[in-house]
Length: 104
Picture 1 (cartoon, rainbow, N blue to C red):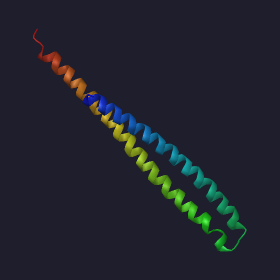
Picture 2: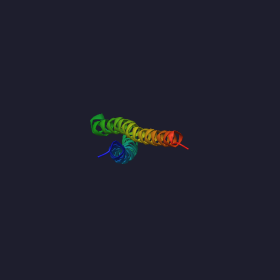
Picture 3: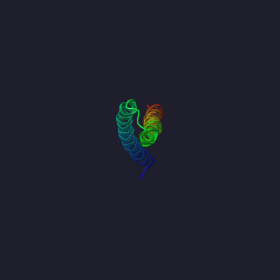
């Protein structure tokens, strides 16, 4: 397997993993929206605080998960995009070098 095909395979894998993390980040955002909305409505009724503990903890968990998943998604997708850019640049320079070094 050539270096270029390994690079493209790894960048495709990174893009797929980044896409999956993006979907998980969006689901985490949805969970945060729903849980925080429920918490605000339920807290307005002034129940005992112990009834709200699970919702409070869920809001924290969804908020941290959303930030961490978005960070990981951007890390993977930017890495894959930059690796492809490097590959294209190297191939362009190699092509220019071959054309220049050809005898005329």
